[in-house]
Structure formats: structure tokens, C-alpha cells
Length: 312
Image 1 (spheres, rainbow, N blue to C red):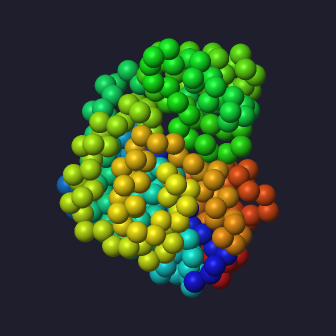
Image 2: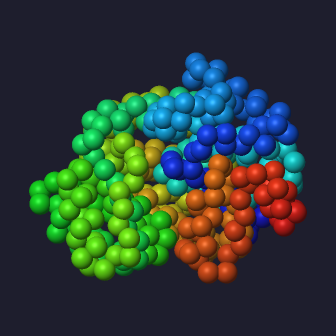
């Protein structure tokens, strides 16, 4: 196990049609992992990720199991083909569940069903069209927080993803998010743009989902992570299972403290970060969170080979 190595797992927004297609053609382990998740879910998840329809893949209760399974498939391929082992794992929002599977806290089958349920509850918590999210670029965190306070007018809008310096995502009621976009622009944001999502994640509107999700979380036989896990809610290494479960529920309506999580990894001595999942969203963010850290991703077979060559 390398004390300087951490694996990070992406969240929603990293999905794309035909993701991992090249890997699937070269590695039977990828297809086997999708088959395992498909059996738990009761539909062919690989076919959905490869052929769509895209609007179905982008529904949160389908997106979440798809990204989780793709991430776990790449993790298994890494374990099978290399000797480098991370001392730490972390995941962005949904990615925390991928990290927990990697760390041996729960099985892929249990996690796939759990995040499907999480997606369903999130969709039910706020009817389509009533919530929104927006990315705010080029504004200090404090200005974004102040803009949300000014725009709220008794409704919910808050900063929910601290993704990188100068990149914050806000979420809340649709009208309040619109107002906050205008206030952020007035305060000098370089860009403030609505995101194409159906669910306002990580804000107070998700509290009812968390309350309903508690039962599903309690029903699972959790194991203590075998790899140190930095959680979103605390931006710190979790040490006991009760705290882990509590923060998984709180994560639904609390901000993702990604910048602080990467800083936490850096202070623990991590110098290499591997993004383990579809896409390269986190790799772009991670570069900006901490200077002088080496960034790798596993999105394509070429990227996988390059990461393996660099780290083994």
C-alpha cells in the first residue's frame, strides 16, 4: 500500500453514452462487473450505458448505479493488473459509494441497489422543474454564500459543491437559483450557468429524502473501510461506522467539501491522485485544489496503461 497514493471516484455528470466501451472490448472483468450489478438491479445496465436511450441513462436513479458500476469495474481491473494500492479513497457525492465498495465496506450488489434507491428518493423529494442547480465560476466562496443569502427570500438556495477554487455549485428552488445566478453575476462572477439536472442535490430540499433513505442505510451490513476514507461532509478520514452512516445521510443535504477533501489528502502525504471512473471531471478539479499533485485517470485503456506505468 502506497501512503502517497489516493483513488478518487467521480459523481453524477461523469456519465456518457458508450462509456468504458474500449475497456469492455479489452477486459472481460469490466463486462463481468456490469453483469453482477445488472443481476442486482434487474435490467441490463451495460446495454443502457452503451446504447441508451441517453435520456434514460441521465435519470438519476439510472445514472447513479451506472457510474458506481463503471467505477468499481475500473477499480477491479486495477487490482487485477497492477500492484499499486492506495492508502486513501474518496468520492465526489455519489462517488463516495464507489469508494466504499472499493474499501470493502459493502458489496457492489448492495451498493447498486442502494444508490438506485437514493436516486429515486432524490427525484421524489423535489418534483421535476421545481428545483435547480447552477455552476458559479470565478467568484470567491464567501461571495457565493452571500449571494445565496441575498437571493433566498425565504426559499432554499445554498452553495452545495465546493469543487475547486473559484468553482462552486449552488442548488435550491428553481426561482431562488435563478435569482442567485443574477446576484452572482452582479458580484462579478465570470460565469453563472444553470446545470442540466433534475434534482437539486446537497441542499435542504433533500432532507426528506435523507429521512426516508435512513432505513435503507440501516438495513445494510456495513463493514469498517479497509482503506482510509475521506468523507464529503467532514472532509476528514472517517474512523467509526456510526459516523460513516450518519454522514452518508447528511451528505444528501450537506455541501460536498471537495477542495477541503483534496487538501486533507495532501496533508496526509498524498502526491498521486487516480480518478477511478468514467470521464475526467475530477482530474480537472483536483489540479486546481492542490498544487504539485500528480493527476491520473483511467477513462481509456491508454490512460489506464499510463497510470499503471507511472505508479507501479
